[in-house]
Length: 302
Ligand SMILES: NC(=O)c1ccc[n+]([C@@H]2O[C@H](COP(=O)([O-])OP(=O)(O)OC[C@H]3O[C@@H](n4cnc5c(N)ncnc54)[C@H](OP(=O)(O)O)[C@@H]3O)[C@@H](O)[C@H]2O)c1
Image (tube, rainbow, N blue to C red; front, side, top):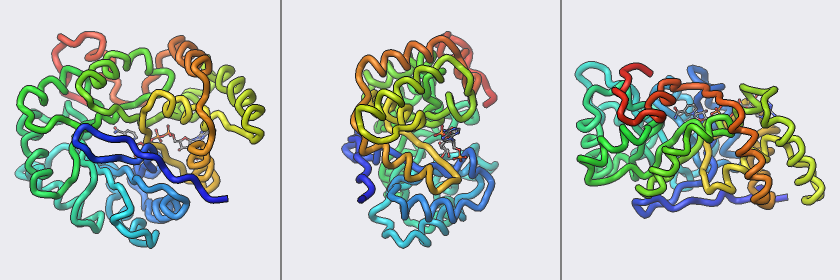
């Protein structure tokens, strides 16, 4: 059977981004990810999500070359880390491009707002990198509306994407970001979408996911896993997602979720409700304070 083609979402700058990305962070952070990246691309992933902070861009570049898939068929995202003293955004991106063995990335994100003293000047430099063709699109990650407002106040190009932790246990806390981003035509994408089973298992979403997986398996005539139900939940909301694994069989499992029919509105509502019973955030714990109180002083630490 042929692996399904990854659908794309259209961004506010007119470009398209594959709905699903394979990440080189979390599990692969600080490791040689080359084999996993090559395997993921060979399996059918076309969007690779990396970051300067993961300290493995060189191995991602190696994996991309080893996959044998031409650069033009791939979508590569990387993210700006805290700037070393004396270095510019452009310098940092150029280093990433060398490591990734490419002339441009498709998406360049400001990884975390709170590590930059002058966010406005960082954004102007991101815009300049786009104008120069070093990146096709620019966006942000782990940004609450307070930080996006600061950028929009000076931007000539608004962020195309805001990549945030998004799974059932942070859905309720993320509603202000989702609502604000929708109004600003910024696409919210998810990292950590499998957290309720991968990091916070034993919570109220478990029995609901299990029930829906069983129901969906019967309706589809094939086994549907809880991880696939979580990915269908994101897809139902129109949210692109970054996932990862170190296991070849899971790469296929994630890609096959694209061939499954949508979960129902009722399934989506049940997962939302179960998720709202527990709040669990994996990273950027400061986001809760800022989302709850947009007037709060922005924290300085990640
Ligand atoms: N922008 C940011 O600040 C930010 C932050 C974090 C991550 N990210 C990006 O997002 C990518 C994905 O992040 P993530 O790891 O949080 O993604 P995720 O999709 O939530 O979780 C992936 C993990 O789930 C595990 N998993 C899958 N099915 C499972 C099951 N049935 N039971 C238990 N565990 C299961 C996998 O373990 P195995 O490896 O054992 O299969 C894998 O390591 C990262 O690599 C990175 O590129 C971005």
